[in-house]
Image (cartoon, rainbow, N blue to C red; front, side, top):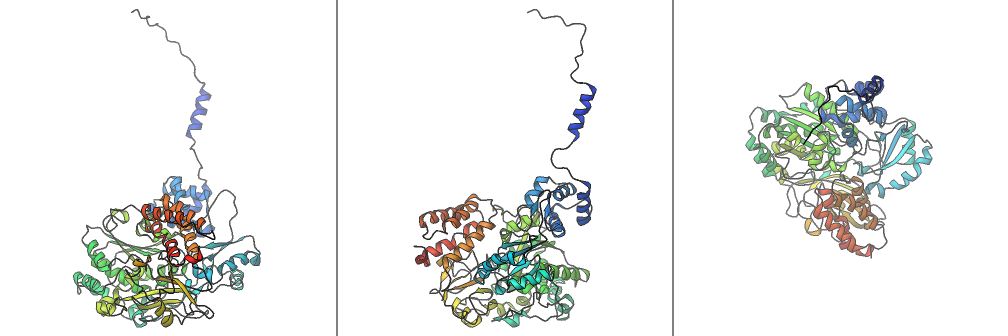
Length: 600
């Protein structure tokens, strides 16, 4: 084959002029997407400080912006992403996951004040819908936003409206208008010299009665708690005067189980995590988002250091290096109180203590699930993890993690100092222990009732709640919050405790007991909680995300399509990865089984 001979001369061909090349370089040097502006970056730095920044503090930083500007402006999110060296998409997906963050674009208006009216069952029964309907016209200010909100954890004070961060108890339109006119937008801090002994309230009412209740009750501060013998037990354990094994045995003998809902034996959990490799962490769940539950808030706002001493005892026994407390965002007063008292504890500790960090939720019920809470503490979307591995082995920041509900740790000091038999000596109907029942609805005296485990609903109403409200007859109840199912008044002799309600398609959960009467419909209770589940689904599982919305739609019909609803229930139970989707069908099945006359 003959190939052409190479030419001795190579001719240059101009593909672009020098000006063309300079323009191309200029265009490529410009970053794609929304660029940060200097003013927004300066505003972000003023709130969160200068870099470097911890990735896990993203949600805390979003709160700082949200508190300052009453919303999250897109230009601040761009600046925050730049300052924290995070992709803008990552910041945006976290910001838009949580209900208490409102992302606004460009020059979109932001309300001066947002008023959230609780539309949980207790507040609905007390007239929340009337408030929602009347407040906008009564306030007459387009810069004031009125919105419905899921349960805010004050069911014994229903109905409740929250003016920015100020809760209006037993709310009326006049009370809310007065709060707005008087610029009451933050919860005041109470006096810190109170006396509070929960053990003395065994088999009694913990909550005050009447509508003249303090928004912020007096509490036992650090100095008062130490003066009353507080932290002495934790110090003995730290110094080895009480060995870890004897403490764990006392916890096991007491029969104390996790009081957040799952009911896992506390002593066994300590033993499991104690055997894991260091470093180990602790995550404390005070998200308390289950509708109808307010026991943790009731104890925390009165006696925070009893909980903190329980936390330190657990940390010493298990070998914890750092503790993270996750508090629901609705508890603004509790947050300020805890920040103040934690600062006092750290400034003058009774003995060397581990690092303790307080983290703030952002309005996501799903973060009550332990692995979703851990994701949120790490600054991510609160989506539950697949298991195994379990968080006792691979939890927060990939380390073995001891996870506890607030109330579980709250009783540790009294169980160890008084002896496990003190706690286990209480109980009815062959059950053992004390339970803090959050009772709300159509009873005369709602509130936290520190009653024997295994008490029945009828005994609870008659002995602790002063009976039903005048003109109301007991018709039904939710024994364990929104997730725990619905039972008729004819089934009033079932012990309310772990493992006693499952045969009836229910469970005790966090012991949130909501009572309704012959003037209410059970199907309305079920629809209320299904709307709640639809609103709070994290969206990770299709059966839960789609199923809750479809179920809520079908449940509005006068006659229910029971076959389709049961198909939905089966799929949600079988295919959802966490308890929200698995428990959401409980109200549907309970209405089918116990209240068929309402949906025929």
